[in-house]
Length: 333
Ligand SMILES: NC(=O)C1=CN([C@@H]2O[C@H](COP(=O)(O)OP(=O)(O)OC[C@H]3O[C@@H](n4cnc5c(N)ncnc54)[C@H](O)[C@@H]3O)[C@@H](O)[C@H]2O)C=CC1
Ligand SMILES: O=C(CO)COP(=O)(O)O
Image (cartoon, rainbow, N blue to C red; front, side, top):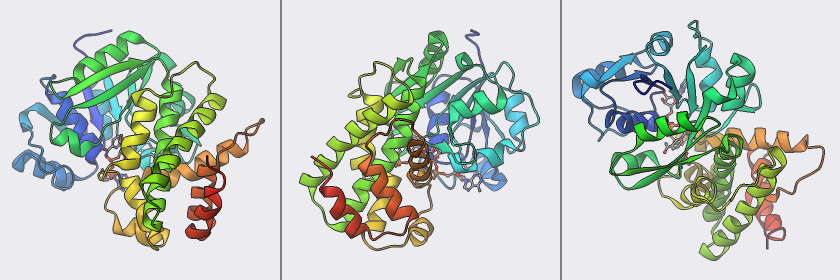
């Protein structure tokens, strides 16, 4: 593993901006691909992303900004994808450069809707990237708190420990601590599932349920996550670790969570469409609810997922949230 590996971040949203900030603490130069050419010009002249985490100041000479995905890929060894899952396939359609020998890390917390695969699996299946060249960057970590340099912990999962250590080292700083993990499948599924549970927490809040119920919801959510991830990939994992329970809690409770915010609007009576239009950011759990529901419907041996089912009914079957959550309360303990 080349210790001088060059990094590129792909994406122009809040998480990509936060990751670039973390990397610039350790790398002389970081590649940064985003579609928006106006934003690129703004970063070059005004030193900050005009649309996301505007308080984060960059040194433009440290950034290799480009709106050409191939240029970013060609100039880097390690590619960190932070494009929302719903737009990943569209972005990858522009790719003509080879991904062979590249190390691909996903910071995306979702399922690729077109393939129904988590991002690592998608790169493995579609681009034939070997699993030891694929990894996951997960939280609990909100981009907004990285911008404020509030102490945060990341988990870096990869089958190849050396690669996980390299990524961890390059993201670390006085406000970022890192753990490494081998559970690439489990951490990725957990990161996708917790977004659905955060939507549930938001709906419950919007409907007027209080903290007492929220804690029961979260307690049931972690058990549901454990059952689901075990059925997907039966590994002896400690579901109480930060990458699983920690990420569920921060997304379920934080004021920065877009998934919770989205759910809250639904609980308050917004339609799905109007809630999405109201938000200038992505709630991955909206897409994940459909994919996670469809995946588990195809499990040969059924797994009990009352919370995913409830969110799916509200978002995709246009069922009344009040009635669905009333029914859900009888299924929790
Ligand atoms: N924001 C956070 O704190 C964290 C986010 N993540 C994950 O990072 C991924 C990216 O999310 P954020 O950066 O937070 O999103 P965001 O909501 O901040 O930004 C959305 C991004 O999507 C782009 N976009 C919008 N429409 C598009 C289209 N049609 N085609 C291509 N791109 C389009 C926007 O230009 C923008 O770059 C998600 O999977 C999210 O779950 C993971 C950990 C923390
Ligand atoms: O993954 C996250 C925190 O770890 C971000 O969650 P939201 O997308 O709900 O803001």
